[in-house]
Structure formats: C-alpha cells, structure tokens
Length: 334
Image (cartoon, rainbow, N blue to C red; front, side):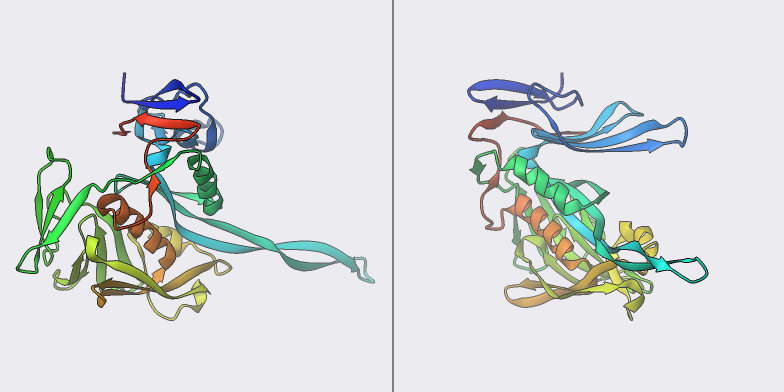
C-alpha cells in the first residue's frame, strides 16, 4: 500500500490511498480533465483530478499516479489568461430580394489559459484549461474548510562574504547542503527551473527562475549578465496592459513551453503584457520587459518562493481543519 492521507471528519478518520485514483469515503470530484487519443475508438491517456481531499494526475497507459498531493498542501496558480470576445448574431430583417440581414453584437468574453499545480516549492503540472480562475476558486472554496496553519519553510539561503556564492541549507537535517555560484549559467546540484523565459521572435537572452536564484543568460556568450538569490528578490509588475498580438511592436518575453500556443493565438484574442521588476534591498536586480501575463508570472514565482522560504507571508493551509482535518500525509510522485 502506498502513502496514506488521514482525514478527520467530525471525530472519525478517513484514510485516502495517495497511490490510487480510487475515491475514498466521502471523497468527491470537484474538477476533472481527461485527455483522450483517437477519433472513433477513443482511449484515455491521463486525467487530472481535483477532489475535496487531494489533487492528482493519473496515467492510464502506465497505470500509475504521476503525482498526488493533499489539497491543503497544493496551490493552483493561474499562470496565463487569454480572453476572446464572443459575438452573437441575430436576424435584423429581409432585403427586397429575400436575403436575410444579420446584425452582430458582443455577447461576453471567453477566457482560456494555463494553470499550474505547485506543492513543496515545485511545479508538478501545468495544463491548459477553460476559465482557469473559476477552477482555482472552486479548489480554494474546498480548502477553506480546513483550519489555517503556518506552512513551514523548506530551505534557508544566505549569501557568503564573496557576495557571489549562495549557500542553501534544507531545514530537514537529513538533506545535504548546496552551494551555488550566482554567475554560473549551469544549474547546481538540487537546482531546478521554475520558469525559463525566452524572447519571441528575436530574443537575445534567456531569463531563468530556479528554486535558488533569478538570473539572465546572454545567448551569444553563454554568460550570466545579472543574478540574484530568489529568497532576497521582491517582484513588482509595472504597466500591465491588455493588448492584441498584432499590435505588439517589439519582442515579447514568455515561458518557453508556451511558444507554440502563442504562435497560434488569433488576432481576436486579448492578453496582458507588462514589465516585471525584481528588487533586492530596494535596488533593481533584474528588469524583465514585455512579459506575457506578468501578473501570472509574479503569482507563480511568489508561490514557489513562499513555499520554499516562507517569505514572511500570511498563514496558509497546512494540514488541520475544523470539521475535517488532514493529520498525516506524504505526497507521492513518479
């Protein structure tokens, strides 16, 4: 049997097998997305599921859980929103030749975008979904049933005297420490990429946000132009504005995994573009210009930073509840 989540409801315990997609007692599906293959004989490839107890992804071809986290420990972050105006057509009349005349009017807005599952300071999944903010609000409503506790940080980081070496100390004493050269373009041991921003169509540098630092790499020299420890950086969005793709006059900075999606965006779609300024002790360490959905970028990085380092944020759900509580859990992933 795999890891078990113990949920207490009105004094009784419910055990949830985190290694199985089977629903436990009292567990209900809040939201589900199933990916299929085939036109006639469709078969399931995988599904992403949010319940009132957990969030998980199940691979049908391999028959395994890709990841599974207690809902109170996972955060759903809307990383990109793209809006499309909807148009309704109505019959206005008939011409003298018997031809119909139609009039169009605005009938609302359709929103699509990307949403990320973040737990333990790591992005476990990021997928496209319609109305991502509504899906997130639904999950947050379920999380509101749990009593709020302070979520403990996972890492501590300090800059050594040379002002170039960052020492990472996990708060779990069984895990090894790591040292990171802020000016080294290669990732250090235990370092992973949270965001990789590239310029389109003619970017000359790439910006990396990792669990340890934020740095910009010159594509010609492969050297680090600017770098700062993640735990010391405060991000601010400047001049966020809605635009259409055809009205952009310069390159846009976006997550590398979104390139194909962005290339296929119709001229009818609106999205937000703006600058992101990274401050360290009140000084600008990195400035990112023309970022696609800068607010989504800030939300994601702030969430990862808070989960890893605490970052002085307000208390977040972390395991106990009023009418229901999670008293023992371990996340699984494969």
